[in-house]
Length: 406
Image 1: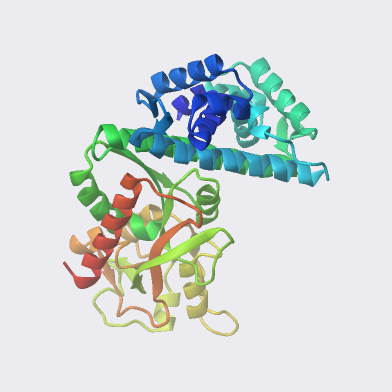
Image 2: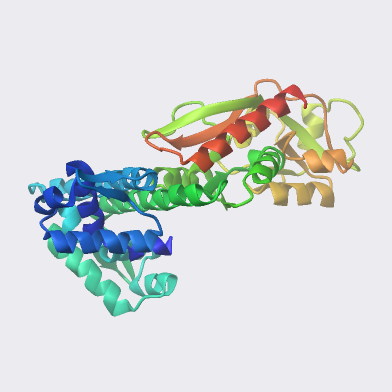
């Protein structure tokens, strides 16, 4: 990611003009740069990338395969930035800035994005290894260009304004596109290279994702895969902002938010589970009264398993467990089941290893009405690289093999 911020944003925009006009001479007017300056900008960018972007011919400049791949991503990145700047200007009912992408630097954009995320200049400087004064100066310069405050002080922290939130999302999407452009070049240089960043929920971590990763890495040994674990709401934001490429886990029944797509992989139900030495283990399907006499570990509010638990124990005049721990951690849940006479609701994949080892058992069959879809959530305008597309294919194949029992 650091390499992305070494680019000169104006030079990236100028090189797009070469692709559009078909020659350096014709592009120099569009880019508002002299031909020698544009030639030098292109040469510097090609040195940074280690790839030739254009074939220079007597008739003009023709993009190479590397140039075609990289510049497609640059175009998307610039469009995101223009849209973000436009949203900020509209928020104050001001006209759009012509060529906003030429008026700012990636350093300034990185500064506002980092400070908005970190909550202070001190934390942001520590995060990216920059000096606080340089970050402060970069944010102020950006505010001057846009004509609107982007940060406001709230005690000891800096809070992003509404305008800043709009801009930061566009910045992160633009950075994701530039990184994808670098990955596309890496794929040209080394088959199977590239980066995939995956957000994962508990239902995918135990079986599906490990199986898919083992298959994928066997054929893509030079790929880098990053796994991010966090609550669903945070991972959904990360998908929308381009921080992660895809989210794997339980899908929501309704579209969770505009701008994302849900793809089903397989359906799975939930069972009541306990450690093998639990008093209810091996005794058939327990009654509701029997279940209520034991402590439970239940999902966090809003989680699907929490809703199933509340449906099982609706309260009112019926039995309801006195002792319970609320947690979204499958690891903590399994630990409690193994440590004492606790009960929980889990899918078969969540306790697959412990079930195979005979440590955790299901009390009866899968609960009726608990079947839910496990699948993939992606940004609706996400354009995967070849490596990312290959992972999606492998993930779908692994899910199909799981459903068929292979």
